[in-house]
Length: 175
Image (cartoon, rainbow, N blue to C red):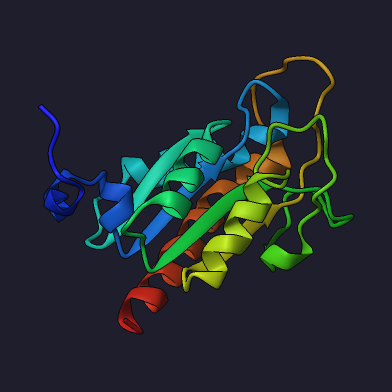
């Protein structure tokens, strides 16, 4: 049965629309270190739930979730993206990236740092959603499917999860 658009209730929206902070673990775990984001999401999901934080292992499906945020009526205060990103750093090194600095020209990549996902995140930022990107320098992004993280990137999963939780707590306290 159809319902009027104004009948939309907060309880009927997906949790990721109503959370204070949405954490998206992005990447392809079948492509070596590109599985970093999903590994961090799984680490966070294995821990105790934290009020106001919604964690999703988005894998390669982040665009649909981000699109829902752009077109929806309600959004989280902040979206935190966790992904592998080549930046010429030491393998396993963690770093925060400004959304404006992400490459928009990666045509063959499934990761978040490809247009149109980056463009949609920029649009969300204009709408008042805080966007934070936590990246890890990969050691190995193979050309063929290869499961498993390199030792360097695997060692960064725990520290990345802690960084995400600290940043999310900071965002929620400032609300």
